[in-house]
Length: 382
Image 1 (cartoon, rainbow, N blue to C red):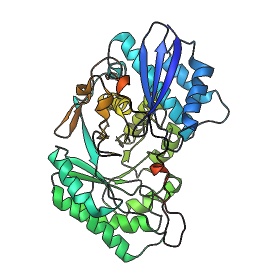
Image 2 (cartoon, rainbow, N blue to C red; image 1 turned 120 degrees about the vertical axis):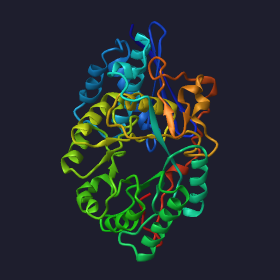
Image 3 (tube, rainbow, N blue to C red; image 1 turned 90 degrees about the vertical axis):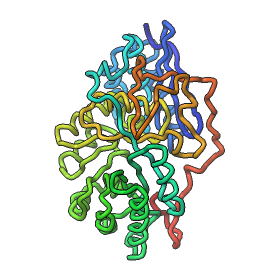
Image 4 (cartoon, one colour; image 1 turned 30 degrees about the vertical axis):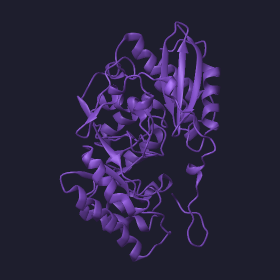
């Protein structure tokens, strides 16, 4: 058996699916992040497959991963690691199907029976954040996440900090003390503003404060941690164990959030999660993506003792009408209830894709390429 063919599908709302086909007719699915790389990531996937995998047996996943990563002199980065991630997921899907077991069985078996999930409720513009919080609670979610603020100036005023505090307070009022709210700074807060903002929202007992500064400013995390009792979370824009190593050595991050479609797939994030466990750091994989990415995350969550909670975009992420299970032949594989998602127990990733349901991506939609600007015309972080 060898990899004989592959296909890429760019589908709505912005997902990139990879289908690997083997010489004996088996199919494995993976999902890569293509945001900001609608052409570059597919081209990287094609290059890796044509160079290293087509014609090869798919089962030696560790060797294939090392070959794709170390095959070039220049390594890492968002494009290469996203391409490797999509391929890696598909290889694990194939291996599970070969042996007739879910991926988590190949990774050591279950450490839990189901996975807690959280729902995103917006917050960039606060007008409807309370209503969204009520809707998600009514749907059974026990944990929510919101953006804490819109764009901030490098050094902003007291009114801006107070507006952010009031935004968080309004959601805490809706959900009560028995449910969790994670606060995402989204890397849009500068080093001087992050401690002020963290201190302002600390009284609302957030589940965590996420990406309080951009990853290139992670040296500021100890100063931010000193201003809040909330756990600090980060990692969606870090792509390898070598980048996460520096976070663990700092000793102030409590939750890491690697993206299995961006940080080298199941193989790499499993290693990152094990490193985190040694530092008593929890895992909460980033996943505002499609059904393949979510299934891959759940397979890893299932067998990872320090997995805390899982991001997901069932129904509600980028466009309110999107339902990622519409792309599945077996939508019950991602059933969720009372704020938890069941662990898919079918072979491989545990899901079956319905290719006839795929809606091709509208490449004329440039909504994700919008640039935020401050009143003086300078570019703002978004």
